Image (cartoon, rainbow, N blue to C red):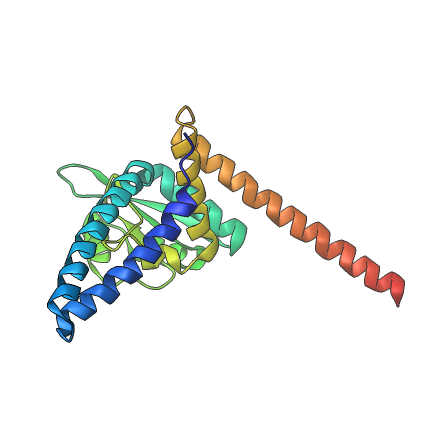
Length: 211
């Protein structure tokens, strides 16, 4: 049976808006007792649905951080240009690897200023510049508690779409590895880029011929 990740995401948006509306009614208290009971019953139903959606999201959107950061850097390079991934070894007791996805310029700055593991720890505790995404866990789950894409990924529209595409591949092709799913989506983005480039070329050529 096919799992429609896009449809699930759209359903989540619909019922979450309804949840907020019904919670607002209950909190304001300007409704009848019967309507209050109806709202509370529906709120419970929505919360059950959201728990089921979270279960699906966690199953298909919990990524290995090493693979995900590589995918993210490549996706942003194809769609926005100039992003790279940097690894930092931290925590002297466990030799944990931290990752940063950033612009190339920021990576050069980080390499000049982060020289020790203490520097790494300070950097990962500090505020994060807008063009930097930090990763400190072995796995990455890109959704927040309300089941929306986290801000650091949502600010990149094509990356947001790509995450849902990877989820769909994982959900409907269980035999495909996570890395292969990432590669498939990156290839699709590359093909889209080439098509746009060809379309732009032929449009320009057409204008020249008509002039």
